[in-house]
Amino acid sequence: MRRPLRRWSGLLIAAAVLIVAALLLGACGSSSSSSSSPSSEGSPKAGGEYNFALGAEPISIEPLNTQESEGAQVEHQLFQGLYVLQLQPDGTTKAVPDLAEKTEVNSDATVFTFTIRKGVMFGSPVNREVTAQDFVDSWSYNAQAKNKSATTYIIAPIKGMDPDTGYASGATLSGVKALDKYTLQVTLQYPFADFPTTLVHPITHVFPVDYATKVGRKAYFDKPVGGTGPYMVKQWKHNQSVTLAKNPDYWNKDGASPNSATAGYVDTINMPIYTDENTEWLAFQAGTVDYSSIPPGNYKAAQNNPSTKDGTWTVKAYPSTSVYFISVSMNKPTLGGADNLPSAPPSTWPPIARP
Image (cartoon, rainbow, N blue to C red):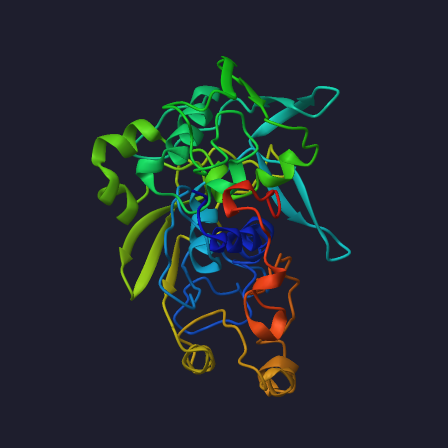
C-alpha cells in the first residue's frame, strides 16, 4: 500500500529550506537585546546574540524528519549534505556542491559517484571526520520504516527503496556504497539526471548515526548534536524556543569551501516561537527579535516606517522557491462522479510525480 500523497508536501522544503536559512543572519533590524552591535566605525562586531523568530513549533530539527520551514530554518544551521541551494544574483536558486568535492555521472544518469570533501568534521561530542560510509549509514537509517521518516520520497529513486512502501527494502540501501573512505557511489532505479538537485533536502544530510543510536531515538530528536554545520543545539524548549550555539570546531572557518557555510558570526542564535504573525511583528517593533515576517497588509507601512527610512530596519521581499500539488476529488458529482474514476485499483496507478 502506498503512503498518502500528503508526503509530497515536503517537496517545497527541498527547494526553499536553504534559501530561508541562508538569509537567516541577514537581519531585518537590530534590537537592543542583541550585543552584536556595530562598532564606532560602522563595521559589524562578531559575537553576541541574534534573535530570529520561528512561526511554529518545528516538527523536527534533524535530517530524519525535517519537513517544514520552521524545522528547516534550524536544521540547516546544524547539518549539511552533498549539495546546497545557492541564491543567484538574478533571484533564482541553483544546487551547487557542498560536502561533495567532485561529482561524476554515467552516460544514462543512473550511477552517480561523489568524492567527499576531506577534513569535514562532526562537531562535539562526536569529534571525528566524516567519511563516505557516514552517508551510507545516514541514508540507510533514514530509509528504514521503523524510523518513520515522512520524507523518504526524496530518496525514492535510489536502488533499494521499495516503491510500494516508500521505505528501504533492506537494512542498508543497496544502491548506496562507500567505494573507499572518501568516495560514495549511488545507483538509481531509473535515469534521473537532476538527482544531485534533490540532495539539498535535509533527509540527505549526513549525521553521526553511531552517536544517535547510542543516545537513543528520543534523546537525539530533542537534541540532535554532532552535525557538521556552523551551529550546535544548545537547548530546545518545546513550543517555546530553540537556542543554538556557535560550533567552535566548525570545519570551514577559513572559507576554503566557497559554497559551504562559513563560520558562525554570532555566538548564539535565539529562536523564540511565535504562532501568531501579528504578535511576532509587535515583538520585532519592540526590539525583542531581530528578524520578523510582516503580516499581510503591513508591508507598505513597514517600508514607510521612519526606522526603515533611516536604515535601522531593512524591509525586503525575499524569493521563495516552492512546489505545490493540487489534489482533486474526482468522486464528487460536481467534478464528474464515479463514472470518471479509473477502473484499475490504486495499487496499479502510475506514480503521479517523482522528486
